[in-house]
Length: 498
Image 1 (cartoon, rainbow, N blue to C red):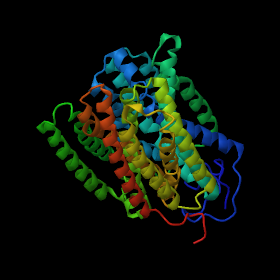
Image 2 (image 1 turned 30 degrees about the vertical axis):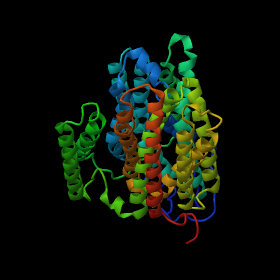
Image 3 (image 1 turned 90 degrees about the vertical axis):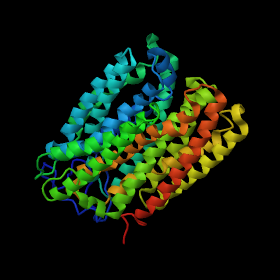
Image 4 (image 1 turned 90 degrees about the horizontal axis):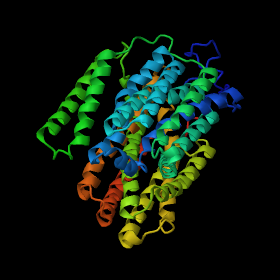
């Protein structure tokens, strides 16, 4: 196998370097990564960590934010949706921008926008400004995040590739839980009397570190003959996603009026127009190379990733509300519950990283089955113990849920992108990231139907417990569907002999 250090770039990267073998057929003989490569990988994973943290950091801080800003149930939903929506809309375009103008350059620009928006979040005094700042954070992420997977995909090979994606999965596992933990701890600590604000202000020094180290250690890469951006495709895809997600988010609050269904129908129509436009532009710099979807493991993996995001968006928001309203826990106690989940996730992700892709689809499928069984057990436990359920009693199912989910993220990304041509790395990365963020946005919107429709905004413990049990059955079903979709992934990893 040729060197997989970041300093040794494939032939389509602008620096003149040795040519890599074709995707999916690396040459044998693992190599070690140079220190610069490890630092660059650390910077890339830190960028991803900031994204995932800010997806979930508000969860345990929601009651404090509501009290401080006077935000109602709809505003609470928009604190997460305002972040997820622009990400879902812009990731495909962000990936294409990286292909054209350079992945490092676009990553750093996105980091600047995200860091400035985080500062604005920390200074916000009302729900309107806070939601607007969260929207701007999402724009920064949409530009920044596609460059992470794209750079990893064109850079690492073989065992080093599996290890890199294993670490990527570990970061996702940690971030999913560290966000609520960090939100609960910082809110409870009330540093300098700032209440929940440090959950956003902490991004400022981290973002500055990413800018400095990213400029120094991440090599620039582009597609040599990349054409200009497909602006019409960008507009059509954005309109389709907004027209679909907005009514799903607002419909319950307004009693599902006719305009909600009209917007959904228009969204489906624009999606069809977008696909037709992309089909006509094939060979002429489309926003989305439709040939990617003819690769079974990419299309199936992306569908599984959509289910993964959907169940996360539905589960994590409702779980923190159940813990605090259904069981009467403080933000700090709820954070401890998330720690239990993170211990399991870290364990599952560690196994995924250490196996270095040897088990291919069997590993993430096993994780999905473990998480499904644990969700069922947790639902039965909640139904039996009601208000008396303690952190100690829920430890086993919660840790197992995390363990199963931790086995999914890294291998799913690795196997889904393994055979994507290097020239389509940005578009494929944008599509794959879009799937999980669109899923999170859909899952958050689904809370209106599955959770808030039952609670009606009530803080009554029994009502919130019953609503959360309903959520768990939905999540278990989504996990089962994700498991089935992963049959599209290969039985054997590409770095093994055929």
